[in-house]
Structures are given as structure tokens and as C-alpha cells.
Length: 318
Image (cartoon, rainbow, N blue to C red):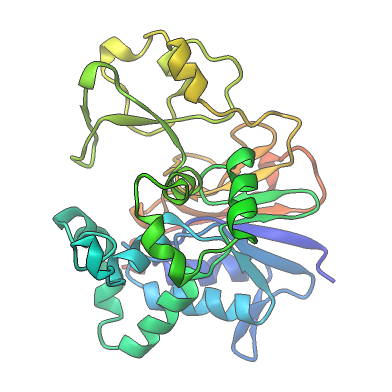
């Protein structure tokens, strides 16, 4: 019987750092699988892409999950690489479910390159990624990659049953008019608002975007700045622009009475701490030489800053 859970953030191919973090938390390799005598790991997704040791990270995580020593939810990067590599039905008019644009190719390049000499193994992982749980709810906490939207989760369960995708659902999942597309966009990428009047902004990574990421835990926000949740700032003249009633209606609110929630996805920086007392983000930009972060969850209802632990990602990971 597990006496506690260790929630682990976005790995992005930092396989050696993952092993260091596991060992730091008291996990050891037994019969080829990392495990803890009393605790269970839970991964918030995004094992793949960008980093130098993607195969290693995938093997460590899958071995732990298969042996019953860990759980995992799907990240947007697992979903992206699956749809990038899955041929589209003939009536879609494109060769793959995810278009092979320059940007999409760049995102998955490291994953495809590092598995290039292991095609059968790569296909096994793609098959495994497809059916990863999309969300997990435990007795006293929840786990999802980017955003917990109870109404959409309830509708997903009512429509499809369970908490997983299947290969048969993948074509529907890329149809922008479908509920499934909107659901995956919400849980894997989070909430956002469109900039007004057709405006756009150029992010630090050079991408031009018409949307900005928003908090889903802000009570009664009034201004754009109240809900902004991304590293890049808004254009100066929009920082204190008022939210319209229509924009407020698009926002989601995960209240303080809800179970503690663990997410990844958001490229945080600095010293890990709860976002609010019942939400912890575990993505602290590991692959950008930040921190690979875990939270050591027991039975608390309010998350504690002192229960975050991490390993700084050294350039030797490269």
C-alpha cells in the first residue's frame, strides 16, 4: 500500500536529471525499474521533445508505470508527436493528422531523431502514448497536464467513457469543430483569451500569437493583467485593459474548495511554490536549464512550499 505520492513535472527528455530526482527522493532501481518502498510517482506528462535523453526518459517512466510504481497523464507533447506521426484518413486531404509544418517539425525533431534507429521501439511508445490517461482523480487530489475543467471532463466521460483516447478517436481529435478537439485543447493547453481587434503579439520565442494564456483560478477578475498567465507580457496598452462581460464569460474558475490540483505545461521560473493553496504547477522549465520539480503529496488539503523538491538541470544533461 502506497503511503504517499510524488508528483513529477515536465521532463522533456532530461532523462539523467529524472534519475537524479528519483534517487534524491529515495527511489532505487530494483529488477530494472525505479521504485520506492512506500511511495508512488505520478507524472504530469511531456516526457518527450526538446531534450537530449528522450529515449531514456520514456523507458524510465513507462517501466515504472507498467510495473505499478507510477501513474501518468498525457501531455500536449505526447499528443502532438502521436498525431504528427499518424497517417490521416484519405478524405482529410493531408498526409498526417498533424500537418508537417516547419514549426510542428521543429517541436518533434529531437524525439524523431533520437528514435530514428529504433523504429519498432518508437512505434511501441506511440501506441502507449495514445492511451495514456488524460486526467486522474485520487481520493484527495487531481492531476491533469494543463487545466481541470469539470464540465468538459464530465461531458467527455458521458460521450466516450473512461479517461483515455484510442487510435479510432484520433481523426476526430484534430477536427477543430468537434467537442473532442476543444476538450483536448482545454486540458492539454489550458485556457486563453483572444487579443482584441485582431491584435497579435510576438513572444520571446519569436512566435506571433493572437491569444494569451489565462489563469483558471482567479476570482472575479476585472483586468487583462488579473488573468495573464504566461512568461511573455501583454502589449503595454493592454496590461490594464478591462475584461468585457463576454471575455469574463469565457474564463474558468477552479475555486479554493476544490481538491488540490497538480498541473505542468506552463514554463514557470524561480523557486517552486503553490500558485494558490490548492494548485501546484510542476513545470519549471527543466529543458531550459531550469528545475525538474516534484511535489511530495501526502494527505494535506493545502499545498506546502516546503514539500516541493527539485534538481537543477545541468548543462551536462546535454
